[in-house]
Each structure stands twice: as structure tokens, then as C-alpha cells.
Length: 495
Image 1 (cartoon, rainbow, N blue to C red):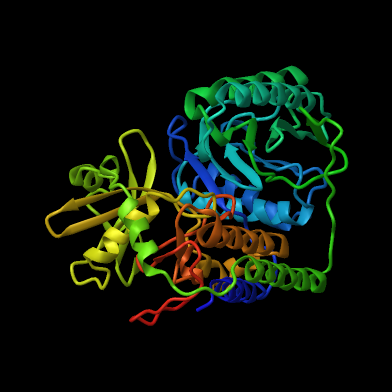
Image 2: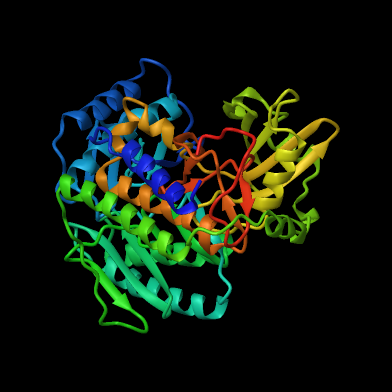
């Protein structure tokens, strides 16, 4: 099949799947904390009554204009206090939906704790029996890092330090209506850092500044040299990445760096215009690839030579016992899903790093050839929109593939779930379509090896914490010559 036509058809299929029903739903879950410091409450206690009354009051409230909620119920030692803070760039309706989902899920995750907190991409929610307002609290803290390690460390850190200091000052100078700032800075003509800083608006200027300073100091300790980092504390949070993740607002965006007078514009378009644009983009890519890749005779020997050039990455091999311990002996509690080739488990390595482990079943149709194929191909691919292979393990008949952990699972879980599909608004759908297209373009044209996936479907597109798509499952992928546009196969594949 013509590679350019295959790319075009794959893009159209993905676009079609993503243009299903729209609504609103909670953003991705990030972290929760059930405090043991204050202990547990007993069932039907006065505190539980006050807490239930407090939580139910959230669902009856209307969306708050500045994204900050503060409620109390009861008095004395049985008082229940709660606050919620939404990211300063999200709409009031998204904020309200996030807070309501957070308060429901937090009770499920921490059913008896007196104090608990939960973070989503759009909001943070917490409750406790002690006073909250006006106190800069930095414990507990969580961190998430994204992407690869930076190579230009000194230039990156210098630009990042200047940007975060600017945002710290700007956010802490905010009023009781909001302490939130976003901005960007150029590291080089081809690299920009985007960042966000926010405090709960009940803090004083000094309190907010102090809290954000703690986060800034914490970043190199947890996540040094990472391209993207998110650190959340109870009273403040900071995030940065090399791709813009926040919505541009008229009031709170600053740009620094080599091109300080550059600007960004947000364009609001109708649903029909968006759908047209998606197909127009796919069509343009199709035409470009057709012009760049005229039909030539297959040259299978070049593909074979390319395979021979791949050096086996022995450094990627993990000890089987380490992975067994990381998955708690492949316990059902850590099982993420079951596929045709075997089960996938969540694992935690000794340093706290999360991984996803595909354990190939002994009767799997993915045999030794496909296993070797996936290891060889994936170890040589590096792209934001491809799932990262961390390693593999072999022990007797056991064959394990170890990947980066992608928290939001596969795209089909959102497309075909009656609740989750509502979260895929047009902006997120466009981001997913664009990401899948970039990943395919890399495989088909920009990588050192030309690779055809051959099994692209919603179930093989994973979504990270920011809903960035990552193409996965390369067991049936095929290597092609650089100028090859056609090929024959003895196996019928999906795409």
C-alpha cells in the first residue's frame, strides 16, 4: 500500500473516531493524599455528618467566578473545612465540573480520613478539621515529570530560573481574586519553555511567594534536567514544559527571552470549521507526502540492511526478579488490562519510578520474532508521540516488555465510555489528532528508520497525564527502505 495514502487514511480514521459526541467531564486525575496525621473518623460521627453536609453543598453551588471555593460546616473540633482551587486559565464550567468530581472521588479514595486532598489537571480539592485559610502549607507535595532529559542543561536552567522567578513575583502580587501567572521564554530559536505558577488566593503576598519558592527549590531535587515538570503542594503549584499546556488569557501571560515581543493568539472557531480544518490538514499532509515520495520499485534488501545495523541494547535488559517485585508478583491489583498478546501491569521500581509491563502469555500469537522486532524498533525510536520502551526481560519462557507508564490509558477507553467520552472536547480532540499525525510522520519520514505500524487503532494510542497521545504496540510493525512506497505482506493487518 502507498505509504502516503496509508498515512492519509490513518489520519482520517483517527479524525473520524475523535469527532464523536461532545460534552464536559473531569480532567485527568493526578494524585491524592489520605492523611494519617489526624486519624480517622468513626461512622455516623458528628464530623462525618458535617463533612457530608459540606460536600453535598458543593454540588448545589453555581460555578465560582475566580475558581476558588471555601466552605465550612459545624464548629469546634468537629468542624469540617474545605477549599477547592481551579487552574486560573480554565473556564468556570470546567472548574465547577472538576470540583464536583473531585469531591466525590476523594471520599471514595479516602473513605474514613479526617483530612484528605486530591489533584486533577484542572483543580485541587481538600478537606480537614483544622483551619485552612491564610496558611501556606507545603506538605504533602507531589511531582510529575514529562519528556526527555534536556541536553543544553546550562542554557535551559538559566532560562527556566529566570522565567519561574518572574512568575513567582507575578503570581504572589495577585489579589484575593486570583494569584495565577503564565509565561514563556526562549531557550534558543527552536526551543521555548512554557510555565505556570499559582497560589490559593487566600494567601498573603509573602505567603504565596514563600510557597512558590519552596516549589522552585524542590524542582531540581525531584526532577533535574527534565523538559517538563509539575510540582503540586497544598497551597501552591508550578508547572513547566517545552510545549504550551495552558490556555492563553488576555490578563495573565508574560513572554521573556530572545524574542520578547513575540505574541500568541487564541482563535475561537466553530465546530464545523474545526472539522473542516482537520480534514484539510490531513489532505495537505497527503499531498505533500505524494509529492515527496513518487512511486518506486520496492527495495527489500535496504530494509534488511537497516535491521542489521541495529545494535542490540543489552543495557535495556532488566532482571526478571526486579520486575516481578515491582509488579508485586504480577498481582491482579496492579493489572491495567488484558490484550491479545498478554496482560499489562503497573509497576513501581525501587526509586519510585512507575512503569507499565506487558507480560506476554505463553500461548500468545506475539512470538519471539515479534518480541525481538518490538525491542529492536522501539529502542531506536524517540518521539514525544511514541510510547517509550524502557527495557525488556527474559526468564525461561517469560517475556516482558517494559514501557513508560502512561496514566490515562488508551484512547478507546475515552471514545467508547459513555462518561469519559464527554471529556474529549474539540480542543483535546484536535491535540490528539495532531499528536498522532506527528507520530506517524516521524515513523514514515523523519526517523532514521522508516517504519509502518500496521496496527494503528484507538486501543494502541495511549494518553498521558496531559492527554498527549502516544502510539504504542509495535509488535507487528514493519521496517521499510527509505524510498520504498509499496510492499507485499503474507499477513493481513489492520492498518
